[in-house]
Length: 258
Image (cartoon, rainbow, N blue to C red; front, side, top):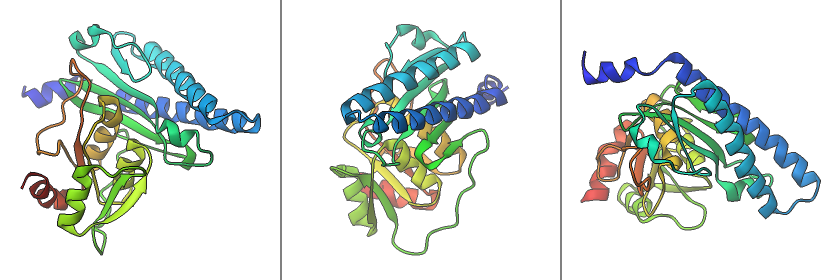
């Protein structure tokens, strides 16, 4: 049995389906929470805090029930060292794009759930609740046909990272501003953009589920130096990534490492 066969033997269809189900449930709860709190006149700061906490609690309860022997690393939880000794670790961002969630009616926020085995995301889901979508490894999206025109590159709403600007200049890309990391990555999966290049700081929970879903859809995923993205590390800081259409990967990596 090869290492790849051994890895896949540790992943079941239930891992894929439950990731999608739990992400969807958390997203539906967040949509209902935002509607209620906005109607009550709650300020954005209260809305953001409530969203982070309630989504975290729901996801943790579901994962504990469904996978009691697995470890969990959540942005909103305590980072326990036991995850480093676990064969299976779920990496979760209960509400990716908290700022956008607090800016009703913005839709560029997400819920991330991914399973990591041997440093690789092997199952995952990204819910885009305000759009009524969940993209996952359960029923992966197919690669969309190539876009006719300049490459479309996703960047942050506030400050485009250096990596994005390098790629944009080298490839003559047009920029599309968007909020959360999950929403950015899923724009590439959905064919609304071609490249998502990030540098300057992220954590594992920001990219783990998006990378799982993007890879399952046939997209290129790597660090900006072309090396593999590795998860469930002692330090969960993972500062950069490249998600793009496979035919654009070589040119983007040359620009980033030239």
